[in-house]
Length: 134
Image (cartoon, rainbow, N blue to C red; front, side, top):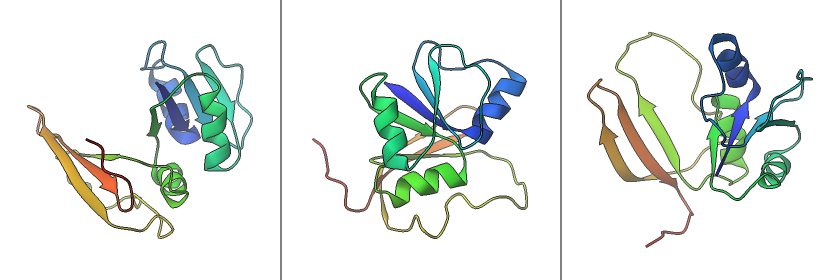
């Protein structure tokens, strides 16, 4: 298992706490220099395919892609997502950043839902064209 995280998400986590995934290897996708990273973190740049290949050097998948619209859109446009979990937080914010860029278009098949006591809902989708398992 591993995590590929966008730079802005990593900076947010670093500013407010510590790596929340314990010993799970993390690859920080960034084009800007990072300071010294403590294990199990490493930095990588390049295309989504190159970043994923770099992440695979630290272990087998699956890999959880954690980040914002830019990271998710790039991995989706490259056809590298096999599952997409969207968390709906019960807060009206009125505006915000798009979840995906127009480059990450396609249909999604709902495969699972889960709701939590705090009102959060998780919607799990399989991107169009992905093989069904089981």
